Amino acid sequence: MSDAPTIAVELPARTFTAGADLRGTLDLRDLDDRARRAKVWLEWRTTGEHEVSGKSDVVLVELEGRVIGGRARPSFAMRVPQAPLSYVGTLFSIEWRCVPERDLAWKIDPRAELLITVEPAAHPRPAPATITPLEDKSWPSFASLVRSLAVGGSAIVKALETRDYAAVDAA
Image (cartoon, rainbow, N blue to C red):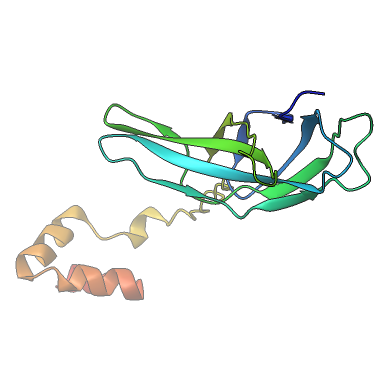
């Protein structure tokens, strides 16, 4: 058994939808039987002129009783944050990472980083509006529309609101 445990994360995909559940498995090796827990979180960073970062809530993964022969493969689940979305641009980029970490007493905590993509949720498109065609004679003539505009245009607005197209012809 080496002095420092190793840690890795396995995910079913590398692209996730904002707000969706992310499920994965940690692969922890070279553990002793006293291993209690590991941590996993999602972290985003900007690259470019002004670097900013943030992270999601930390998920604690219990290891007690799961270490067999110095190895544990616990699963975890978390929700992908709604924002920011992954972005690659010329001036800056936004990168997401899944970061597992093993908490060791009085030692440097081993961690791993797996680059992922967070994309927008697909919003259902609204159904196209049903337009009922009007009879040709219900629409005012082009000449009466022009006359109404010359008078101030309020007759057109009123006619459209009330559907009284005869008022446009009278204006």
